[in-house]
Length: 229
Length: 229
DNA sequence: TAGATTGTTAATCGATTAACAATC
DNA sequence: TAGATTGTTAATCGATTAACAATC
Image (cartoon, rainbow over all chains, first blue to last red; front, side):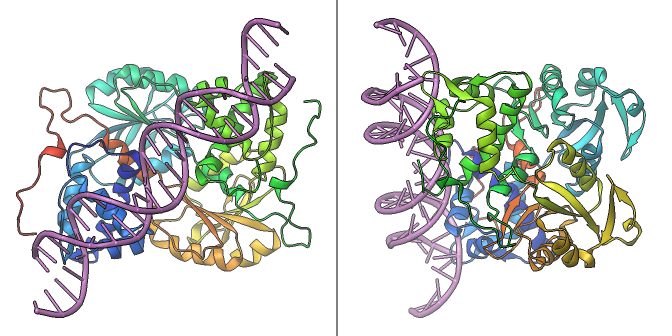
């Protein structure tokens, strides 16, 4: 089907499909059904078919999806069929880690510049790139046609860096700092804050820890109605 | 309200609330309304009230929420009012980055052991911790009462590590590898894969890149109905 | 042809938002 | 009291899943 607005949930599943399809391709699997895909990815097959059908009729009834063809299509949909230049702001451990993953994503989404505000970091190298001072950001963004920024600076600097990225004309931002950033609505921003994931995980742990002490369930320990808070 | 099952979406917002509340607390703000919170966090105030109301009557009509009190409550709900021991598997850059964030989260959710399978890494130090060989995992998990595992190994090793974590008796896993892992249903697993975030971000970029080339919109370029794929 | 699997519509389920009485 | 803001119910919106005709 065509001309509907695609939900964020759908878009977020596309890279997941792409990844597994690439894996299948490597293994020289030619064809895959929504059934099989769903099994592997823990998703409902109907959902997978529906997701893909938003963008075109990519499958063959009775057969399934051609792996190479679908890869090509999803890469096109995600605009990964051309290189997208990315700036990384924050040359700490996390920045390092990301610039490694870079290789992995070959071509598309390529980190082409790294910035930091910490003097001693400037001029050092990360994966072939020289760390630049942050005040060169705007200039470099223009020069290198950078369209995406990744923020890996500390919390306290994140909003300032976001402002600078926006000012530099970047179209999208991936934010690793654990703060909600304010950017104009035409700039797309995704939170990639893993502290949220980690902390929310704790909720699902059992109470007590097996040592015999047990099972105080929070839902039941309602506070005395009127403590002085 | 009580005794409903809380949706994942709700649980994932709790750490976000907690973080901002902690910030407010630092700034010695005593009280906050769902209105103000919503503004800061880009969330609907009604949603915030509803989220919190699942767990108790934490607010005061006409007044709002007492910051310290709400912090205490959310920490309790998330089980962050006691220390939760965490194992980190994978001592690469990402692992390093995470072990730094550790400090930040003070007390609760503490990384108490680091593992790697790469021989030369073993015995080196990360933030006071000695990197251990992965075959010591089970033993150490038991010894140190580790309840959560964080996977930061390469894709290809992730499932194996997950299996080992499960076998060791860990209750929850945060997975940074870009793969869907299979674990028994009693083990909670969260995907913290930022490649998904990054790639999905590309979808929202404008077509063309301002150089005059323009606006091929994917929805409209439907393939010729029957290419040989 | 028989079996498999898509694309799509309809049904279901769940989450967000609006609205408002209760009350500080 | 008047103004503010909660907790909660009802309305809305959106996303997932089931079901099935079309068709390879």
